[in-house]
View 1 (cartoon, rainbow, N blue to C red):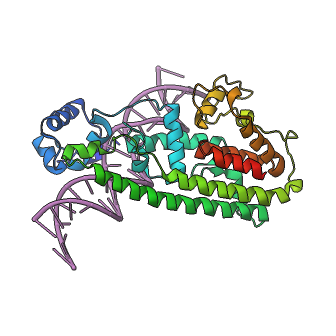
View 2 (view 1 turned 60 degrees about the vertical axis):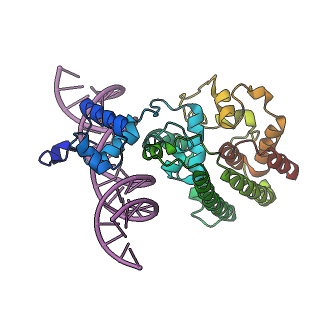
Length: 323
DNA sequence: AAGTGCGGCAACCGCAAAAGG
DNA sequence: ACCTTTTGCGGTTGCCGCACT
């Protein structure tokens, strides 16, 4: 933010940092550490408030910051963690080494949010927009959606509580106390989000109950595109505007030579694994789900599978057996 | 070339929690 | 136990630069 003009008369400088200020701050911290940010400002010969110095250091000057393009894997991580944690940017940042919460927040707001919207997912809930909008009226299918959203939310809250508890325990267990290391703390090796287990388990419960209730009304669900054969390998092609799962827009009638690989990566398969080697069981589940519940649900299933990853194969297989 | 609109992002604001006295 | 100061966090602002007309 560049508000310096309105604070020109003030003793405290605001607005964009100059290279000279950066150099002073960096030199001081390298020599003395930051200590109290308020006193640092004066000692370093800066006319900035301590808060501004801290922010500058934290978001820009630290040596262990990676800037620039986010990788596909980072995209995936942010999307998954945002589905789990919401706008808890600092928590999300602990899983992305060398990325700041501010950068992740900006990246989400300017890129990822739009990508999700583009492929028809509500960025706030990570669910198909149709399902969210549908909950406004009272038909049974939409009430069912609402129920599943509530289950998701409940699972999310439980997972979050467990996540926070576990993180605190880990912090406590490993705990160096130097002041400078506090800033580095969030760049420790990423914690495995074990709370995903809870979320996954709950998600599968939801899926199973959803599949049971939806199959009864399968005959009523029309097949609007007349195809009905949504499969694992091409479900990302159902979007009209050539947007793949990571939101890259290839324009109308696109042919994206890498999207299968990107998709498999996002779905949790190894990058080197070609789509042809994706287990046929997965295709069967999508196909069956599409057949029983309609393509809309099949797409939801694909999105859900995308969100929770593919490691939970046992549940995946049991879902197939149920169907 | 000049004007306009818009997206990206650095930096600020305000609040809450934690730490210190 | 209470008050003050410091730190952390998420939301928001507004300048810069680019694309478009």
